[in-house]
Length: 195
Image 1 (tube, helix red, strand yellow):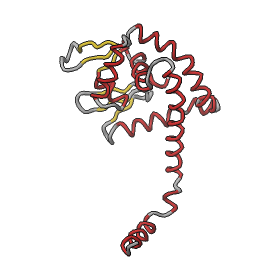
Image 2: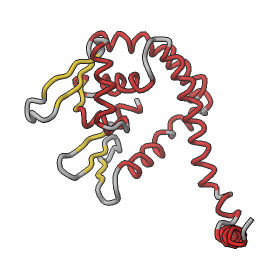
Image 3: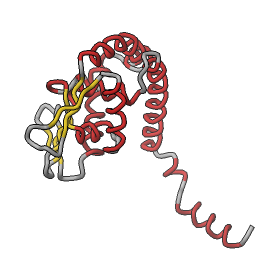
Image 4: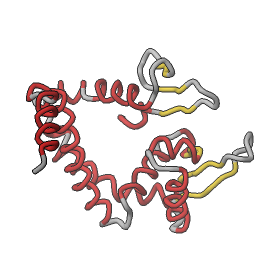
């Protein structure tokens, strides 16, 4: 090995102490990530038994929990963390299967809505009992009632901080809505996701 390697390694070791590596915040994020990955893996298998990918299920859930069962494509993109082209591909598949339909936005010809159909609602109804059983078995059933009652607050606050740049987010007093102030306003309906 070259002398430069050892010099760089020594400098790095001096800068990154074990105190930083062992910081409880690193542990908390790591545990959250592992729990999320494990849970979504279990949920994805159950959802696949009904002929949907996890992201397709997420789109249907978000639509069904939105006012009038519809969201603008751009809002759907924001809520699912998909790119606009990614949302288009998912909506294309769901539309092909008759689970959603597109509807032109009456106030903005450049925008369109995705609307859940009755067939989409029926598919969700067939998935949700098993889905809720798995959530109970692998997540909410592991929490004490007081933990479950308070679990959404830190998650909502974390979403607010992560999704909305500093100084750009407004939250209503009930902390059920987050809106981003730049034009045009984007609304994420967190209350609908947690109930």
